[in-house]
Amino acid sequence: MTNKLTGNFVKAVFFLIPVAAVPFLNDSFALPKAILLWMFIPLFFAADSFAADREESPVYFVTGIYFLLSLFSIYPVLSFTGLYRYYFSGFFSLLAGVALFRILRNFPQAAVKKQLGFLLFSALLTCAAVFAGGGERISSTFGNPNFYGGVLAAVSPYALYFSISKPGYIIHFMFFAIALLMTHSRASWMGVSAGIIFFIFCAGKKHGLSVMRMAATPKLKARPGRIRHGRRSASQGSAARNVLAALALIIAGAFISSPRFSGDIVRRAVSIFDLSEADIVSRFEGYAASLAMFAEKPLFGHGPESFSILFRSHAPVSFIRQTGGLAHAGYSHCWPLQILTETGLAGFGAWFLLIFVLIKKAIASKELFKKAAGASVIAYAVTNLFAFPSITELLIFWFSAAVIYGPRQVPPFAGNIFTRKGRLFAAAASFLILSAPLVSEILFVKAVKSPDNEKAYALFRRAAFFLPADYHLMNAGKRCILIYNNTNLPLWLDRGDYFFEKLAKKNPRHALALNGLGVSAREKLELYKDKKYAGIAETFFKKAIENDPYLKAARLNLALLLEKEGRFAQALSQYEQALEIYRDDQQMLFNSGVVSVNAGNPKKALEFWYRLREINPGYGKLSGYIKQAEAI
Image 1 (tube, helix red, strand yellow):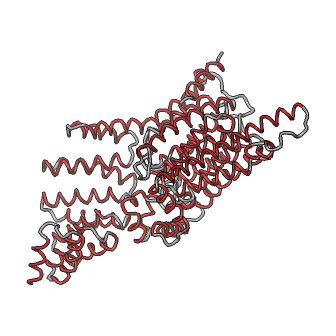
Image 2 (tube, rainbow, N blue to C red; image 1 turned 90 degrees about the vertical axis):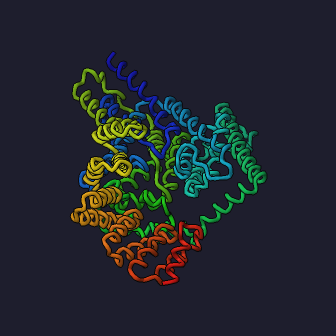
Image 3 (cartoon, rainbow, N blue to C red; image 1 turned 90 degrees about the horizontal axis):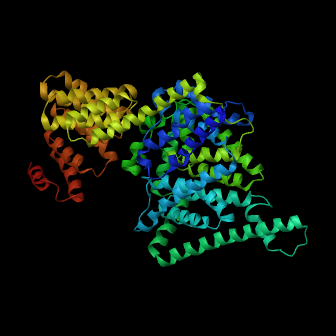
């Protein structure tokens, strides 16, 4: 009775697996997805048998290494929780993936296939973006074409596998292929190609696409049992041929009917081999910066999730100039290099071992389903040689790992969780801890939507109590500064400081938080006329620039502060350094001219203003300033 109760409970929660992968939870703000994935941790504590399985040791090796490296990280909190907004490599997400892996292995293959069918249907729904593409790169509900492409690359081998025996899945495979083309994600194209090639050539003579040979020789004499197998194989071969032929015809039709579509795809594909392309050159520069970070701590790295903090201070100017506004994410478009930087040779070796074991098991297996899972792992790994995974890709990876390992041979459930106080306590505690970020997210969203400033502030304070994300604290502080600008009430500066300081304590290298503290101090200088605030503001701005040399706001704010203090030469130096990165920034070009005039150098001012006139002849009162400088 107790085992039945526990089993029913686990089966009910099991349906959260495809829900966690539903793409309509946008990956750009994917904390709800992370929470759904994290919820498998309390389920694991409550219902897993904890029975040892020596074959799973590579999984536990990765988990143990990550736990230790998170403890000794430069910022342990960030290493455990991970980044909520961009990608998820923190320990909680890893532990959640392992919990999902363990839970999936408690179910028979038929149940796992049903969940996979739901996941594929969920991915198919996103392909509605194909009809609204308008010739542009599509990202559907994923916020980023590369994230969307990575998910499609990971699920495509499963769609091909199902379409061999279930013709209805041909639609999935076709739409995934067309949507993949429309993402223009070169990394995903290479990933899905590697996965499909793996599936075709590693399926074995009695499985998959190689049965087409048998289909071509139906008159071969055989025993009755072999005839039945031959018929099944022939139908599988015919289905496979139909899938690939129909896909080729549809893609060819799309290319013929839309020259713009075909031209964009061809140019994008050819650019993969153009090593002189600016985007590819900048990636190589990013790789070099990543290796420089790795060289600082080669054995154990700086800690999971530390990459985003350190990368901006290591990347060259040309990389930031090329990536532009996207560079705030702090990435190098190479997940293995990121793992190498964050966890050193220890963590990288553990991950490499796990992926190697998964692929080896898939190749050795006689089951076509496991080979499809291996193809999905290959697609995931190859795609992220040139990108970094989203939370949905992470979930699919652990799903595939569970498929490759197959159902466990030990009793699946641990009995009635309600009679096991230790397990119940662990499950309840982990549930409360992991639900805290979701509470923070809910309160934060309510605060952002609230038109009442006092009510919004109260909600922000509550959100800050429940394991807030960095962007929660940052946006709360920004709103307080904006309210001060509208009301001139000093109270709001102190309130903004609360959020900025909390963020700076969590991550002392957070350049945006340091810049926010500098802005607050500069406003206090204007308000109280106390010179001590000038020194405080300058210190914070310089710290922000030190940790992120490419943060335009910090350089601009420091230059304005120096200008107000009459230190024109230093202010001009800040503008010139910023203009090396942001060459066409109109505000900085104009301000540089003003500072040059105030420093007694109108000739230098004209150089800046002439550049500005070429970019925007109608900028403000630029023509009047130029005439005055020319007259001088």
